[in-house]
Amino acid sequence: MKTAKTVLVVEDNPIEREGVAAVLRQEGYDAVVASNGKEALERLNLAPPDVMLLDMMMAELDGWQLLKMLRSHPELLSPPVIIMTGLGIASLEWARSLSAVGLICKPFDMEQLKGELVRVLGAHC
Image (cartoon, rainbow, N blue to C red):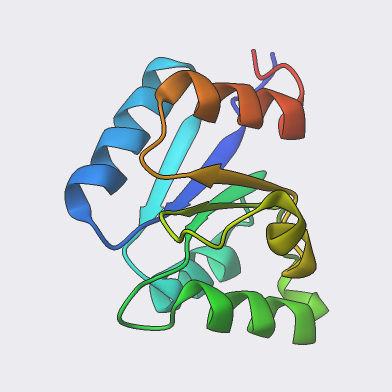
């Protein structure tokens, strides 16, 4: 029996975080949440997810700091990262320069999110 792919949703806005997690669970993913980069590191140490959705602007250990830590500590077994941001400067090239595999600009629709996850993970069910 195939197990569901695990998605770590790192987002400081509780409504967005839980909304994304709920949709992912409905789609058959195992969604795990973190409200900042510090919580994300704790989750990564417990069990590495298959992919991480990462908000960049957070109060405690933001996305830039977390990505820098993951790049400098390969023993953390960092999953592929898809950046979620409302930053106007965001582009796929910018995201890749930060070692991310994808980018979702906010506000985004769930079809875009699901498509990006399938692109990165392949079929999940």
